[in-house]
Length: 408
Ligand code: ATP
Ligand code: MG
Image (cartoon, rainbow, N blue to C red):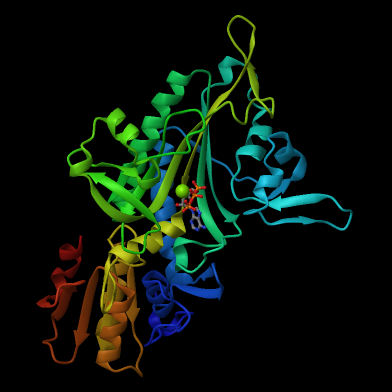
């Protein structure tokens, strides 16, 4: 991609109405554009990052046998009334009537509609277990939408749901998902701590995946030896006793919840009558679990934990491009490097702008935060190119012919 053709422009100063670092840097870099509090549009650079996060999630979930589907954002009142949640959902759910007076809500989670849909396909023990997920826009009437991508009112969620005949089968799958989550977060460049939390409907705990950061709204207590934590809400003496953890050794930290997994049991299958016939012909409710990740929140969290005073520092796996190539008055030569990088499958953002000074180009490269910066300039010998890793301060000059091998 060429910077001269890019839809967005960078900003030199922080937007006045944003206090969160992720929002400031992502807006300045042209990754996202703000529509209103808690609502952001993804611009080409931001969309590339988001798609990479989504694809990491897809790869890891497909490996554990989950299939991707896509549900409706529209949800009807009847289904939510069956579980008794329509009225209590009002606080977060955008609910409205159509011209005939029929009531709907915009999805903020999908346990109800998916459980209803699953009745078409799950009838017998032979149909189980099953696991499906989607990556879809959710809507929540969030009261405190001032942390940029961390807390949107419109945001993307990956929600996975699994269906089982027995608690043991569910428990096993649940652990597989937890392991997949560890891989997903570390591939995006995040260090996420699995955290005991309250709120499991049919289990003692639910599990949150928390990333330590000053901006985090949660407080967690980390057991560094075990690389696990407990959320403040469940940090009682009783819980610590149960876990056998020594209170004095726990480290208190603010953290961002990037993922959350729950054992639901039969909370949804019973009221919505999702049942199966077992081997002896008896009808039983299906046992369920649900598992969420916020890809936009992940993107915001990466920016929060990985930046410096110049801009963002992306990991290679989710950077919009691996390479940021800058031409300083040498467009013909730089164009040649650009073509060669692309031909060898290396993703490159090429700053071919002729009306920008070197300082401005370097500042943009630091702000956008691709892992490698290449510079082709008139100050170097014809066969040379400068290479620098973000955020290292010192560049190296190497032979242009070596660049592909170096980057691979
Ligand atoms: P929180 O405690 O932060 O309000 P939650 O516990 O309500 O989140 P879930 O309903 O479990 O979150 O949603 C699953 C995942 O979706 C969360 O772990 C988070 O990564 C993401 N998520 C939830 N709410 C938002 C939001 N408003 N904006 C962006 N991502 C969100
Ligand atoms: Mg939560």
